[in-house]
Image (tube, rainbow, N blue to C red; front, side, top):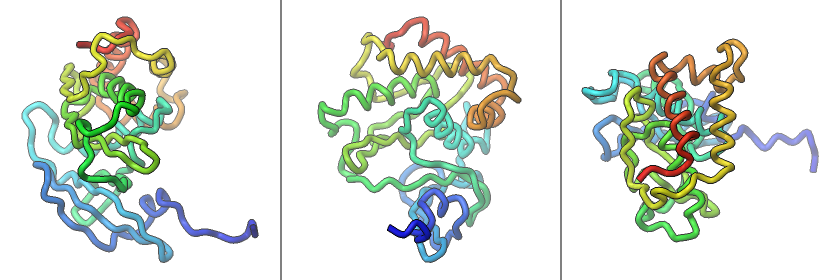
Length: 234
């Protein structure tokens, strides 16, 4: 293979830097959500665009923050090394700034209730993630079965609230011990959250500056709680 041959931009490059050439409103949800096509150097990538201006007002979440929470969930997934949230950024689009998330090719007939028993370990990761991110809207169709049987977690606009508000369909593991590998990742994160902000790794620094101070404090409290209890609640 010729090392000088360029196969073109990656999907993440396209999503970051490409031009949005088409957008179509999806019929689901109370907030405006678009399937968009992004083009760069003759290559295309599909993504999900959720503009700030399309967010419906909520009584319990600050207005105009849901798109930031979508990005915060991606950052948390990457910081923990769990890779369960599709690549997500904040960028401008046809209706202004919003979250843009890589589209996951999936079977739309599949959801949490149709997943097979072999998915349990992946679901444990997502269930643990929901505790830490304080997921308030984990519905069955917010889990997508992608290529190779990988489960992706989507729709994280209602996360990171300062008050505990976990609402989820994933209760299969109630009272089970949380796997040690997951607890180790959480312990590492909790330790780093006590460091000065300027000394934090780039993704973690971005997360703690993206969220309000009270929500960062609540994140620490949830980590402390999970690390003390060490079991899935039920």
